[in-house]
Image (cartoon, rainbow, N blue to C red):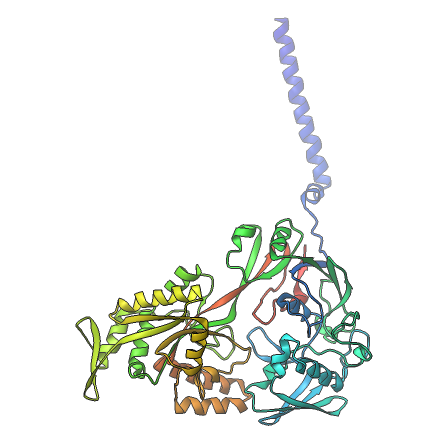
Length: 528
């Protein structure tokens, strides 16, 4: 009995303690209702720096460096006369005006209110000095001034640039960074130990063997965007790209740019975000439009319908690229056809041929032309030293055989390939180019093009667009070019490469890269 009595007493005592505890907690929290919320909420701290990684560092001087990522970062420090926007329009930067005086002469006005990072004034002499350095041929940007014959200084804010010959959309050539003349007086430009200065958002504060530090410049002219949250950019220098991947996985780098197709093998698939953009390595299948068979547009169009570009991109390139429909579909504002379809349709390929008098007999497409029978048997030339293009050629041969078009692959050495290409001695050839930022398509459709293609209307349009500034009219002209291209298909656009900006999840802001620049809208970025 006694044991049961004490047992009940203990239970009652425990219940009273529980009730009392609940009572105390309730009234305490009632008097301080925010206490628990405040203790459980993690304070978000905005960090004022950002960490980048580069490999194979050479120099921060943008006119000397051969490192693509350095040149990318340098756009935050050094500025051009004319910039390129996210959709590849030209935009005045250090220049306030670019006037075309004739086909071979341009007058450029620079803004004397803009300052170098040492406080000195931007002047016309700086433009002349920069172009003179580029004409020495030691810079990636030397190509931009290849057709420049000379630069005249008209006054402190004005230069005249004279060309050897007309350059369509020459404004796109003025996207090289400008450096100050006076800063390098008495110095050997290529060996000086002086830290280069620009007119941009950031300035170089320190360079050593392992790190480069950039700081926000108080001399930057763009006051509207000068309130960027990032005060400092810390650039870590690595000997190879693999070290960047490892550092990123460890959380020591916030963002980097890569063209690596197998990125996931190095950094996994979680803990970061990717921002992909279309590159300008453009691959295409060129048709000799003077060839007895390929001079027929319906044959070229049938080939276009018969080739599944998606299949090629998947089997040969592991889907690391973008299907291409036209040379400037890398994001240029003048290409308005938003189709991403490869146009693959085997039945339509056959219909195009039959509608134009071709018959499929004895396992061949044939047609009576000028009292003789033409048969579609084609040769495809490819550089045998290019493994990817060899694989593409085999894929195309297989696909065309499925609609009854026979293909013989002509596998040649690199030297023979270049000779054949130069002399246009082929029926079909796999080739490619690196697109310029300019929307000029004369290389593909203008005089002396690789395809021996001629269209009077396109020739007229290509002359017209050289002198048109009004955007809507330019778009109208380019839409017509694309329409004619699709109807006649003098070459078949295949695909282009891709680039990737990789960022950690604690980096926020508008991250909208293209092939020209990875850091658009940098002033909106922040790190938490």
